[in-house]
Length: 630
Image 1 (cartoon, helix red, strand yellow):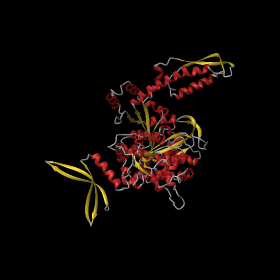
Image 2 (cartoon, helix red, strand yellow):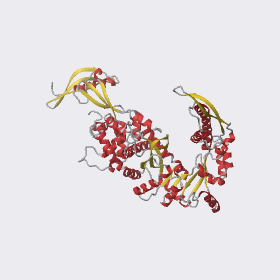
Image 3 (cartoon, rainbow, N blue to C red):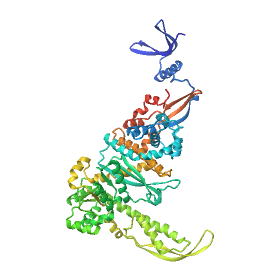
């Protein structure tokens, strides 16, 4: 047969007013530079599916590399590898140009510190594992293809050798993120949010771990420190020794941030737990502007200037059906009513009033700081509701748990010990301000220990008095009331709000929820805990990797929120979709194995478009990176 190729030939035939297409398998070739065609088999009219079927058969006859004749019984999926979630992680690593922070010296290392940090960051978007297991999981992803780092180079010992070097670059990474965010117009950076959380350790003892109270109660932990922009981008983070008090961290933070950034032009916003006179004086001495709030005890210094009658009247309103009446009542009393569910006014005090308050506190510094009294009707309603629920829980604990426990003791109980336990439970339930009266009735009983010995003991029964509505009066008094504090002067208001695009200090303080969201993402999505390392540098480097992974997460979340094509999706939902797009190794025949990508769903395509990285599923990119066989 002359040299040529098989083709699916078509011919057309017109009958009446209709045109019919007929197909044949033909052999096309040239002879003396002239084209010829030999019809090998006439197929007649074909459906679209039949056309595609015969075209694949012809491709096989022509020995095209992408075509393979096979029996369906021989086709077998062998392995699948994580692709899309990891690829997105690498995309946003490059988006933030994080590699530029690292020093690269390829003549000395087969794998750079930068590569280790990049892989550890990206891999957390797919699966969370300890550092020792990450090297094994790396083999189950496409990261080796995307980074060019073979699995044998990315091993446990290499990871641990590089952790210290990653930690050395922590502050430079934060500074780089801040400057890059500004260049990309992702932030103006006028307001920074600062908060702390705790992290639990697993495994061997660490010098940073201390026993004390944290979010999970009393246990061994470390303190996580984080500073983010109003958009949630991290610019500084650190780990402190466990049991470090919130109010004692600001001095160290300011010293380090000033060393890193120089003079701080941004306004620092932080939770009321960090408001202490020493901290505020430190910030003022450094010329740093701040926004925060007073705690409940500090608010009571202003009780002579609080219209409790107005607030009590508002608490009797229906917060849903009488919203307009509530707004009107506050407007008549000179409160600003622009904020949703929040009514406030600045406390304007005479010099005599300032002196009277300062004589008692010596801390509020009323001449330099401004105080805004605020009331939230919804917060007041919920505070009352939850307080009563906590009282019910306390009563249930006394009747069904503590009295039962006291009746079964094997040693006589001391009355002071019993009282201490009750007071601790009241404190834990946050109902110390509720008038709860009780009596401790002493009695004798006998109990038997595990060895069968009879023990004669003296113990107590807790008898609660009836808890009437009047018991809540003092506690309810301050429900919904809070006070914002700032050292930004009234003369600076107009320029400050114009520069920051905020309309009030309450807009800003409410955004502290962003940093709470940051810790929630680090905890629930990045999964910072447990810290399966125990050396100080390794613990800090682990947190740095988690923060970089969080940076990717918050960037994704912000882009999704700003996209008009995607409904508001959670990070868990986004990654649930992306994790399903994997590379598959498929055996077509005894001697032919190919790699394919699971067909992207419409939702995955929409997500990638919103994240501006749809190239990750384009054939050219997939072929170039060997995600799919050429």
